[in-house]
Image (cartoon, rainbow, N blue to C red):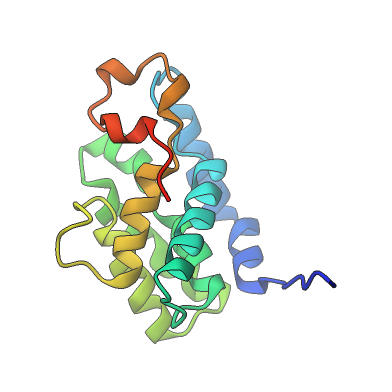
Length: 167
């Protein structure tokens, strides 16, 4: 069986974007002493992989893999804004994502879908969310390895379910 590898040119444009790299650096600096999960590139990539698998299992094949990945990689880029101003990071991330998506080559309809999901990702997954927003909200929680975390007892996001393997 031959493995089919696909390129993701727009996602690769995003991760090479100076502003995107700058936002990740600002988050890293703000979270240097944070004892809870970090909001770095690895977190975004893990969320992307989980959201993609979840959507495949839900038979939601209407979304391109590149859309899912770029949404997950951008969902927390506004964390540094929240740390500085108190503004909700989901809203800040959606605003910061707009020009990055345009520069990466996404079309207006794709951008609208991505921005909506980013803005929704911090809401409870049972609320009336878009398909992509719901998958992002779930994947954002499932991407955390709470079983081995020393800070889980003080974490506002921790639930007993997060220590379980869920199919």
